[in-house]
Image (tube, rainbow, N blue to C red):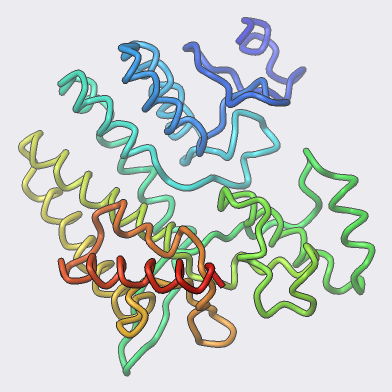
Length: 307
């Protein structure tokens, strides 16, 4: 990023990044949170760990400044984050380099990013007389997205005036999810075929909770590696609580998969999405038998043509 962005930030929407980074391509000239994890995987395979370390430091600097990693490195993305993969990024880098000193220097910043989700994106869900805390994508700010202002405004004009601010917040939550935009978030809306029915914050998403479960496990492992047993136990307990919540709210024993939970209807969304199996990728399940059940779920869906 050119030095003028640092010396005159008021003249730019770009947020200054000290270290080089890889952009995801297309129209983007800044880095994006969600995309960068996959970029880092490729960089490590290409024996470019110093580039990964610089990108990680850019993200850590953002957390230190703003309390979370924004959707992307623009001031107009500060209201929202994206799927929380910073802890996993650190794990991949440290596994590749054994750079424990870098981990030690930044472990508290990683904790801040995990705390952001606990403090700002949590929701309590009841089942079987018990309450469980899980997470959702949620951006409590109205107004069109600055990067898509005219499109959001035109879309909102198709709705009654009283519904427009809610739509703007839901579109931002959809962008925060990384699925911008998907019919996954339209289910049960007033018109499930239209983008104006986006209801992202009304779901407890499987993948988000799998990512956070994975992050809690990694944080426990990090603290144990650094000799802080108290913090290691804290995150181990948080992961155990989330596993119980995911099993109670998201897991469907009969179908053999996890499903987004609709907060308005109190039911699971039984549609097929790759995110239904995110806990397998994240290693966030307590019963090894769930793997066989999930495989059977895939076989059934394949036979049915994924309908």
